[in-house]
Image 1 (cartoon, helix red, strand yellow):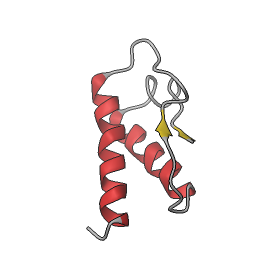
Image 2: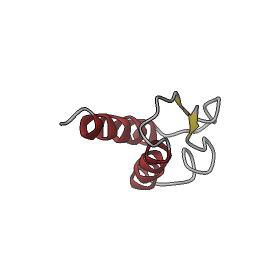
Image 3: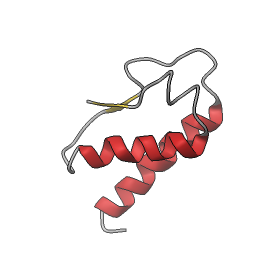
Image 4: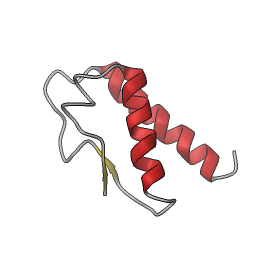
Length: 68
């Protein structure tokens, strides 16, 4: 299970920082299958834009893994 810190990254960081943090989690998985998670929960006040950035990073990562 790969976790993006829900409070520090999800709430307190910009969408761009959340995108990079998510790519970092995914890259550390070394292409093993993982469940990408917001640390087991969603923090109050998590901006929609940050959720979208996490999903964007996941899509970007999967596109490079699948050969584009």
